[in-house]
Image (cartoon, rainbow, N blue to C red; front, top):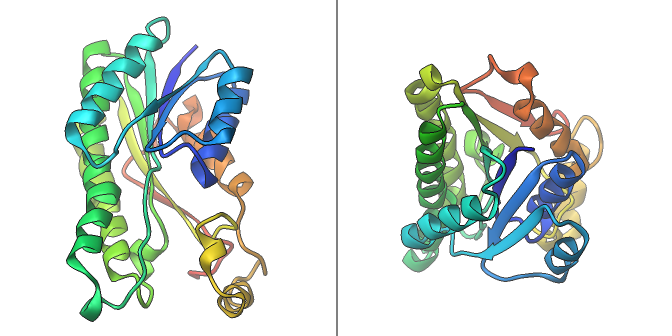
Length: 242
């Protein structure tokens, strides 16, 4: 059995990733600020699942969480980190508050850096390779009105992916990003009906994506078949960025 850490696994895409990995037979630990009813149910149903409270943007809490998670899963080596935690705040940059910019970058980018550092330390001690998958976004490469800070954080995440792939390839550690398009999750539920309809019209496959459109790609990047893939950003968006 292999152990996988998922950040931001309490709802939406993160919860879908956690559930998928459990049914794939992995031992999974995840963190979030608060425990949801869905997380409580998973803990009751799956003995190979553990939730921890953690502020992803806090370096000290990140270190404590990874140490505690690896201690809990001491019978299974850490195989992968999935940096999924993220927040989105909308507003044109000219009037965007500093407090929102700081919070967004701290979670989306700094948090991913903190977690990658801790996971890499574990991988290097184990000396058996490992996988890091960063959940990015098409907004990081395409941009979107009102999401300048969010776009910058996701572009930075893709840059982190490429740099870490070069740094750690000789240790058989692969680092890749997945860039979803617009998904039918809690985050997209904040969009107005007209915006959702516009996105669907612009998407060649004529629908929003789902969690189930993303999880097979994660399984692939975790598999032996992806051992020679690193430093890449895999876009899964129904063709909207073509």
